[in-house]
Image (cartoon, rainbow, N blue to C red; front, side, top):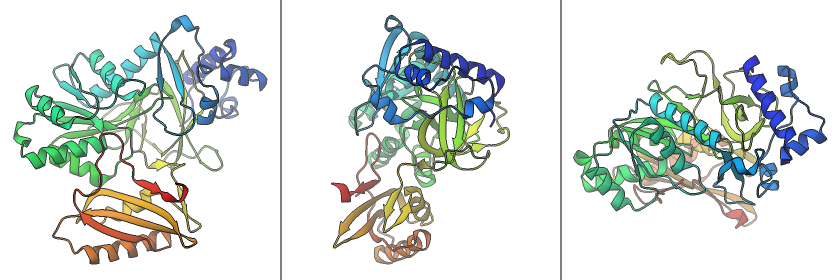
Length: 411
């Protein structure tokens, strides 16, 4: 995916914004002698932006527009280090709403729908992002926010909600509760828009089948507006992203060199029209790939594949680099398992140990299944984990993001 002349002009405008302000990146660019870009080669010589930069700029060092033009701040949901604060101008908020409106339209959601929003409000971008886009669309919004499953379900029934917006973890929890209570015939949902965490095919299938809905994968991050910068369509072959608002590259996470379209790597994003806190070549650490060619849906907007994981969620165990997705891909081959799993890593008696907890219903032979999983995981990653099979429903469910990996070596 090459940067177009129009995108280059927009990147150049963003760089001028940064240089003309006294913001964190403005100072960095001036010190580095960066005055702008005219060619793709110029662009590829620009330094990457990193999460640590954003923490170092705390609290308002990223602010590039005059303060009297800033109307809102958001903060990332990360739990480590200083928070990242992103300022937004009124135009930024409006642009974000426009991108989110497109997401709803791509998912076939209309102003006749009733959209129940369960992600958190406040500093986190999720709840307010889903709401902003729904209001631009003209739909009826049920702004529930997170938790209180009892009330979520009663409002869903009484208001005849047609669209559910949630993390995939909470969508699964709601699906299980609906099944448990035998109230599916009272639910009017037809579509679900889910994001903020990676979710595998087995989890997708469970949510889709148990709720009887079409599901869409939405993409975004607080540093770049929030959720809504991309979404899957009815053909479910990757996520379209809005290349008039962002330029997206895929780079090798080790060498940081661009990879060819179709190859997996780390997503790097440059904003094209952001005023409050422009970011150029921001390393997201999300792993995906550009899907070459046009989508069957006919849209000209380019696509990336579903997020495979993060370049920084790699676990080093017994000297081996392991990604959660490798374990998940093995587990998905066992039809008797539910979609839920947990990986615990500990250090006992001078060596690392990996324990994998999975769920199965009573029809499975738990001991035999555990042995088969352990053997298959060993053939994939090179060492044998301890596998424990438990009853479906035993592993924790989450109203937010599900914690899949618990590394007890650093507790």
